Length: 181
Image (cartoon, rainbow, N blue to C red; front, top):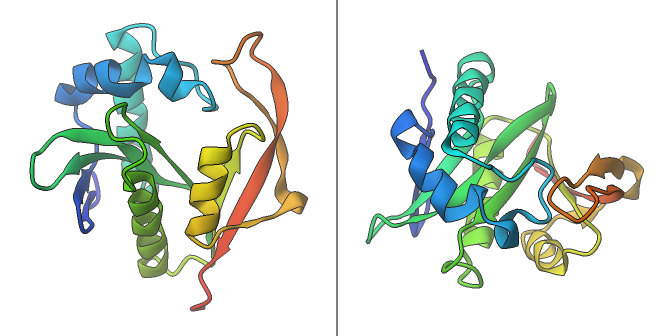
């Protein structure tokens, strides 16, 4: 049984991915190099990869009661991208977002992060982390806009499989403190 995995924000509805979403995920972001270049997971080469992601998502929600969320425009129903939380330890989670082409630069990434901050507060988490390629200023700016602060003590080496040569790079860490607990 999958825990409650439906959330909403001012302009978006977010829900757990289901098998019927595989083609949408593949076509709108997971197979596109321009969208996935700075992500730490390999770009999807086929629908089988997107289906594997959905199985991974199911497992995360069943075992951890959180995981990936797909984001849709509340008015049009159009697919916008994805976000979610992954537990790092008992009171700390990591987050991020991927916005589909056509929706970049419209504040949806910021709204995704703010939604994950609200979710973290409702879960009584102490901290959210986000790991960013050092040459990705758009994500850095978005994190800072949402109150995340650079935390060099948590920076870590990550493989960026969608960049030429799949380099291992020291990813910057940005942290956000709940301040409530």
